[in-house]
Image (cartoon, rainbow, N blue to C red; front, side, top):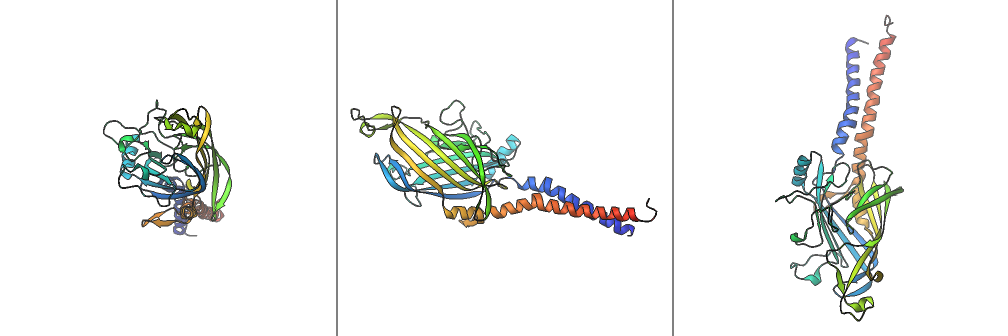
Length: 357
């Protein structure tokens, strides 16, 4: 083998080893971050639910519920906060509307309280772009980029983090996704109703539409829901007819199951078994909500295979996971093997030449 040929092979060998290192230690960390401008829609359905209608002041059975969640990334806020904190974060505005009518639409006038949904929650969360964990962000002054939570459309009702508040201390734990390269271990996950994070346990591996997922389960024991103002109901509803109106307490418990694509950390499917009651003097009197509600088939399909909504591509985590897997494992591994083979070939030929010893 001539000198030029050996030099060319050595150069190629070094090149492929370099590709392996770049893929594993530069390309993958660069790409394994949540996109700041992401938009996502999910639809969950719960058949045969029991609810308490505040408008009718009575319990309703055999109700079909639909919850629609919209998630929108704020790119400008993400860049601003990332710079201020010197770490890569993403900022998402989320809204979840739950009602007993399909495709619910808010009334054009907020004063039409009878037409408001059964439940509405809006949040702004700041998350670590790699791990998906909540990042505290509560700026002062006229800076409105901070996290918040609210149950109305009125901006004045938005609660900002307050460590001394029983209503909202700030987001914590995982909120909208799991870390890239999710492990078979326990994490903590945010519960919007109680406004704090609880442990969520790894359970098993399953497959959804051909996609391998990790199943996690979070059991939230029964407890009181923190409120700013006590809920008042007629005494007759809670077996105290002697009083026209009494203060009651809402309780809540939930078993949440999440199906996670482990490479991207994306939630492919979610299910909740909720039970909320109205208690009086420490005794449950009415069922406020009893439902098993889960992502519908179209949402699961979109999350796995991908689809367009409002001409914007969403989901498609099977392909995204395959791309990240290729960049983090198969391309570096293949390049490393090829590079080492080339270098080894040159070394063997060099050692085998006459007079090389």
